[in-house]
Amino acid sequence: MKRFSKIPVGEYSRLLKQYLQSQRKSIIWLSVLLLSGILLQLVHPQIIRYFIDTAQSQGSMEPLWYAALLFLGATLVQQLVSVAAAYVGENVGWVATNQLRGDVAAHCLKLDMSFHKSHTSGAIIERVDGDINNLANFFSNFVISLLSNLVLVFGMLVLLFREGWQIGTGMLAFVVFALLSINYIRKFAVPHWGQLRQMSAKFFGFLGEHLEGTEDTRANGATGYVIRRFHALLREWLPLRVKAFMGWAAMWITTIVVFTIGNAVAFAVCAYLWSKGSITLGTVYMVFYYTELMAKPIEKIRTQMEDLQKADASITRVRELLQTQSAVQDGIGAPIASGALSVTFDKVSFGYEDNRAILHEVDFHLEKGKVLGLLGRTGSGKTTTARLLLRFYDPLQGTILLEGTDVKKAKLHELRKRVGMVTQTIEIFQGTIRDNLTFFDEKVEDARVIAVLEELGMGAWYRSLPNGLDTQLESGGGGLSAGEAQLLSFARVFLADPGLVILDEASSRLDPATEQRIERAIGRLLQDRTCIIIAHRLATIERADRIMVLDNGRIAEYGDRKALAADPSSAYSRLLETGMEELLV
Image 1: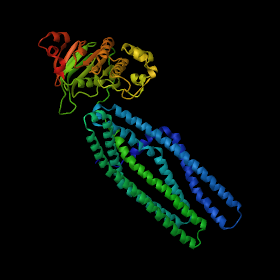
Image 2 (image 1 turned 30 degrees about the vertical axis):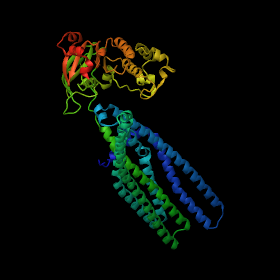
Image 3 (image 1 turned 180 degrees about the horizontal axis):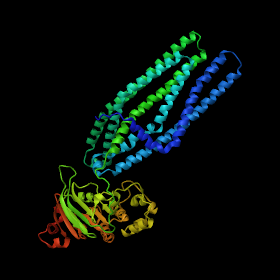
Image 4 (image 1 turned 90 degrees about the horizontal axis):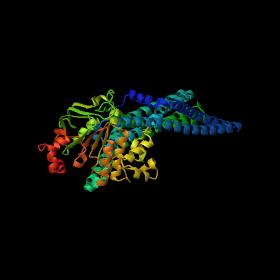
């Protein structure tokens, strides 16, 4: 199990400065409220001492009434201040953690596909949500509350020293002993929280992965395996949870023992001084009140240390995630030409693993405005070729050019605006049809969205919707047929107006009638655009100008479709004669 190193103080300071700087006014208000609360807590015992000593003197009742009213008023104000401080503190923590959560989520989205392939969605969610939730108290009031509690302890010690050096010295020894004891115990508890957070991410990663694949799990009879693995992870999790709990319990028990010792010290000192007549009964009560009151800030310091040990683990994990660099770095901003884009692969080689190449020196040029039919058996490198064009990965060797521009030199967001891709797997998000088609881009006008739907033959479907573009879609496309979902994915691409369109088995899920609608729509929408069609079926590449056949990551054949079809010795011609489905599957 991985060990978590101690976080440098500078890391805490950097996080606090970065995410609290925009909330200066709230921080100032929180400081004022906490200091006001400290003052009121220090005043309470003084009022009670005055009340007791005045009552003993058997004087007028009027001072007692004033003291009682003052005590009630101070108590009420203290409660109001406490509620206000809690509200402001929680708000500060909420804003700060949301900002951090947004930064971490944005960073994850920028990481390349190799990162997402090696980390489950559940593990990433646990870091973005679970780890950052553990930092809420750290951001909301850790430093200010810690300082205020230390100030409260210091204030009580000052007032106790005023009553006598014996009282002050006894309480000072108690405070030093308490803080040293708690800090010593904390050293043994910190590593367990780090291990617990890591195990939590592992468990939720497993859970998220198998909940997403429930249908396949059931269909293949793997439910028993999943349940066994589920219980195995719980058995692995339990001892770590027990160790973390024992660490917390050790701190809690230590605090109780320390407070008991503190009360004993206060009792011994007060009994000695009262027996000598050096202090009044009201002073004895005040000392005990301060001793009990001192337990609260020390207890809070203990819980803050517990929060800090949780924050240690979470900050380590969040920092590691933020320091993870994408293997695909953004380009310098070389412009990509408008309109249709030519595609050039110059001796491109690539493998997902260092020791296993998928593409071997792939070299071809597709003129702009032309359609390339990309054929090959499963695993031959067809989809990998498309992923390289979108820079989901970078080639190990060689160069990829779009209209003469090296894709590595273009900005990623500009590249992905100019290259559109439609795959078999269609992601439908919970939201309106407008949001699903425009990806929340408010610049896209409704009229243009409707025009694209009409162009794709979805006009009748759109007009049947109860709320038009504001109609809500379910996550995963519930309520849509496979054909409707596929057509919506086409609409997304064409709304982006790319210069290169990649269709990766894009019509394989459609029924014949819908496929005919798609074929007609593609013919109109691919005008003045370059297209790469990855397909197993002949019907989907009949519009291709060029044919490229991949075999084990190498180009087996490349040329004009009609010329290859007319050449009996070509691989494409043999596919036409034999039946492409049989040869390519």
